[in-house]
Length: 453
Image 1 (cartoon, rainbow, N blue to C red):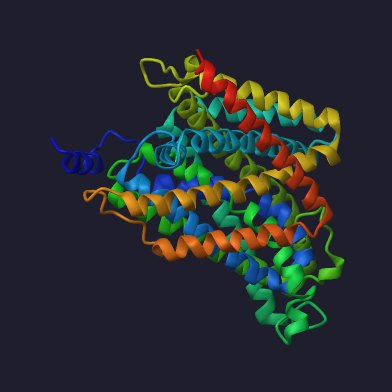
Image 2: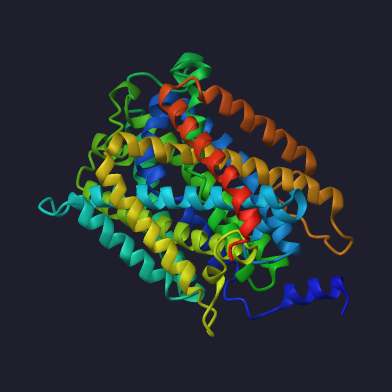
């Protein structure tokens, strides 16, 4: 069988456990989380009503990166996906750095989401410490990931439906109130340039770092592509569902929020969805929203944990992590990678409570810069693949606009990175990300000698 026939055989293989809708569920589950329901308040405060445009712009950037990631996956469905492709096309050092950056970023995200879920659950049971909720939530996430890809996909799809449903209800209530009573803010946010760009163009651009963070869960969908049956048809369909669905939900949600709350009255410690519902007179929905936020965070944690396990297995297979971590059971379960990810995540959560919120937030904010670096490397990998791909690698994602789209997206990411450094707290996160990246890069020298046993 030649390579072209081999690719076609892979594309028709039925052994994979995921179809387009399961993969889309993993994607939506990995993206919609605390970043939207809570973190978006910071972006709204910085950008004002122009946050609508920021989320649309962020969605376009995300679509190009997701298209680049999955274009190669359609033709070369392998475990570890984009890390493997980066190593093949840019060299072992690049694959090593990307893999460990994605893993570290995922672990930090797991820690922050677990701590956030502890805070939200305390709303229902104030007598119990948030740290207890955080650890219990993490243990549940670890258990769900033990069930296997098939059940994992089902669970993520169910959670995705719950999140989409609550956002749809929020949008319905908001649109109903706006049609009935008009804007609930003093000034029409779309009446002029200053009302729309409340903090000028600089505020809009600086909000993009936070906005991009709300989209950073796309790695989960990329890591799951190796489990998809009929990649040539199912992967493009899933990515289109995810991209259109996420952008529409995000943009219309922001439209409702900025039409119902005065920007200067925003409380960044409370979900903007709850603040908006309270302003609309639906205070009873606060408990419901808090419950959905918990579901959303669980969903993101499940997807992030899955991605961490997959990337660790890929690193072990390349000799860039202890090789025993990549061993699987007879049923294909990667027990050691699963255990290692869980153990490290628990330690990070405990560390988060020990060192305090401020310092831990700096660690977490570095994840946004890891996302920028990860996305840039993936786009460069895609450009190199376009130049060197084989004649049988004919499939391409409909999302990305080829080499031109990838180059423009890289330039935009660089510009946004530079602009974000104008915010002091963002600079601290950048320095943390830079230090971690340097440590990983130096560590490569030792790995290269030992090859991890």
